[in-house]
Length: 619
Image 1 (cartoon, rainbow, N blue to C red):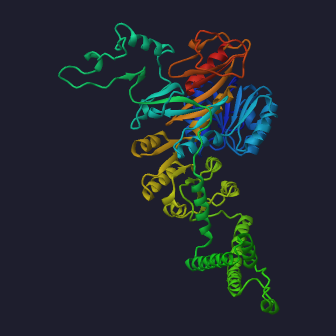
Image 2 (cartoon, rainbow, N blue to C red; image 1 turned 90 degrees about the vertical axis):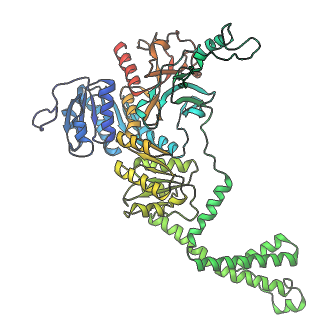
Image 3 (cartoon, rainbow, N blue to C red; image 1 turned 180 degrees about the vertical axis):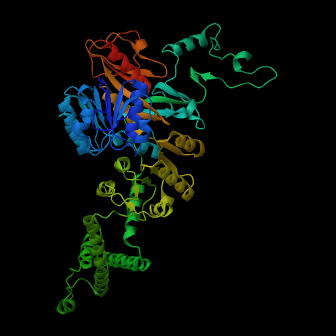
């Protein structure tokens, strides 16, 4: 149902519904999340039904109503029945607009649950105190760690207590494994992936040991393994064997597991590499070959003169002191009377050395002054710094929107060299990364030229995170053309594009900002706390913490009741009597939860939605 005008209320009387304000990709995914997984009535308030994702949102089945209004005014909120709604999600517009809309909605319905998207996280934390029942989330902050981790080919982690959880694949899985989160992984056909597959129970390992050491087991009392029967080897007489269908209860194919580390894996960059980058980066100030020749000659002359002074006086400290004074033009010449009396600085050769150092200082002074003026002047004018000759082994971030700015800042914070590319000179992310000293290539020229200026030949990865799928794919392909084998991470909303990227490009990854952020926004809208999201290729795994409240639906439930193959896995329990202790892989599957207990679960989007539906129905 859509609105036809403002003469009559566009939305028929409705209650206990959820309102989504926005027409962008995040709004699109959030509506899908609420309709398909949480199965709740949704009313959408669009700024323009002809732009962005609005046409697709309008065609989604299960949406109760779609209303068009240029701004989120009090009149617009009343038109979508905010006074009877259970929740409101503000996922479009600027921070200021969302704050005004949130406060206005709270005035109309004090009990409504409000979730608003805020780029400024610090401001969002403060706004939460003004809302009776609200949460402020940042879609870019939720998704940026996944992009940064993919660029470095390292696992993205979520902190739970004093541990950091991450996804490990195949050979990287070690003894810190908590549970298998995916199997049947095939890069050529990602639709085969099974999330949170059914596994053997906790006692399966003990059962296998008992079978192996039993009377009929393959291991003899002496410890020598018996040869397995032909039926167990998978080889029949007269024909080749087939591979095992499963190993340890996990289906054949690639496997991903949830692992815990005591600290987040660091990005190891040697100090000598950092020093080399710094030294080479200074060459950007000396672009002229003639200038370099003059300066190198002058530097060699100063070093030779200093060596002569040291040889004549045998005093390193004094020689350095005199050399620096001469280089700065502060030397005191000998007087003729002092030279005649032999009380001068120490002979003709020393005077020659001091004269050489003084004249070389005259060469260095204007160059140093020009460099300082250039650095300070470009900073005052707000001009972005171009990448220097020393930019090596860096990550190129293409697109400085909200996500690109976050990704660049996070990589910079890890100590990884970053170069940004942005076609829009007015993009607000330019000022943010310039404040961090990150080089930026700005302009609307050919993409090949922009990547060349970003020193693609010396880069380690490209992260394409502009708002357009086709542009991001073009940047990735252009990067591969300029440097075959470079790591590429592409932001793609379209799943078909993503499947082609994984099937045709090696050393590539695809992420969707809205796909990563929408489950967290939906869970927050339902009042659930999502600690973080982890990516399994294009799939999302949510790490959430649930609390058993007095009279709530969780009280009395055990692991058997909560866990659902393909949907939910309980990975830790925090008992009410020791809330600071996380009991990982809690062994007692029959213990019912008591008020005050907390559980940490790994869940799919639909799995967390089913838990929420069950708890709302029972609570």
